[in-house]
Figure 1: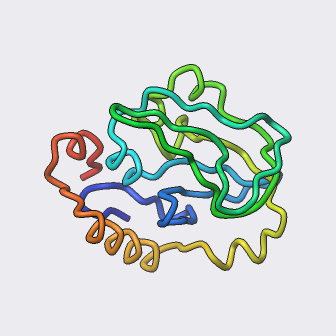
Figure 2 (figure 1 turned 60 degrees about the vertical axis):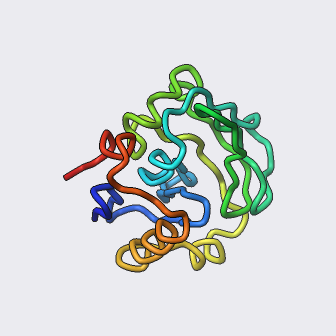
Amino acid sequence: MTLHGLAFPDELLYAPDYNLWLRADDDGLTLGLTAYGCASYGQIFAFTPKRDGWHIDKDRSFGVVEFAKAASSARCPLAGTLLASNPAVVERPALINQDCYGAGWMVRLQPDDWPAARSELLSGAAALAAFAERMRLDGFDPHDAGVQALRQE
């Protein structure tokens, strides 16, 4: 799936209010920043995650993302225990911008209540509609040069 040329892979789940994607694996969840999140932040210069083993409450930070003009807490859409952060991203944060759905994943999490959390996540057309609305509310300009670098069309 694409929206304004930004990719949103069909097989992933999304938390549009957090600009995050999630993938359920056999041993937990993998989380990362969406292409829209990358377009919104611009070039990412640092990612500082919480420590492995740290319990994260819903809506609380699992790390800090630093970009050109500011820093922002990466808030979690569900409660759980941080299993691991991506050491490659900590060392080379540009991986988030270069491959946000692959090598640029951010953290792995063991959710406290996956069935309840899963019911709040979106996929497919519902995810695209939520991101379209978010882009509208944010005044997102898909023709901006920074966005063009992320286009998948």
